[in-house]
Length: 306
Image (cartoon, rainbow, N blue to C red):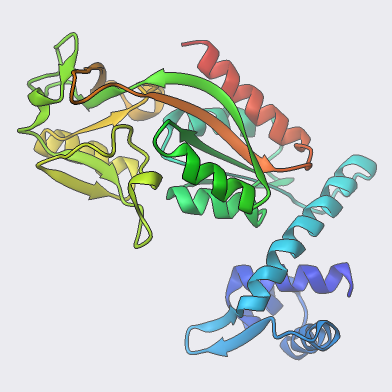
């Protein structure tokens, strides 16, 4: 097994096609196929299978890819520390629940580097995908939250995927809505006051559950609900339907605009407030790259400025 073969597998998995991967690698398709076949024979497992949708990983291949990405990232970290290849683009990715402050910190981080020398990726995704991305080293860092309700399930998933959680900030629930919403000027908003308006939440996919919800107080019964897949759609629904969502109250006005407000959630006996512990996840025993450390410093700087 060689690093070149490992890189070939990572590239094919990313492209979903032998032909596209060969073009990206500047080698012939037969050469690439032969290299992968040799690796499969050596390991005695099938890594890929061809389908009508292209070249996809087998179950054994998915497991191999997780280890391959981890090994190759260590190799790239060593190259970064001990050499200075001017013609190789270094990669840095962040996967996050839908937090505007995470994007803001990413922007400030990218500004400090030559974009011609780096390949950056900022992924706002479902909770499970954030965990999977960091587990497979598709992203170096993931951002999500824990609370009393979800932490048992999330922490087990982190342990199973050899990940660790580092807390950044604790915050209570806020109601996030359009500034012209009938409740926008309230000093606080109770659950009963919200019952005539649609509650907006981010879609978590077929495997979605209360435990993966990005919105705090996800176990409450909401008479009107709408799922969205991105922040832009959610903001449009707030304007068009007077919808709202329950969040941390940490809003980056620079990115989200000044047309929205966060009002403290007013708890009662049946609907107590909760604490969100927002933090980042990384692979255990894997040191952050220089750019990863800068990104976390930018996140912390923004949160500490609130």
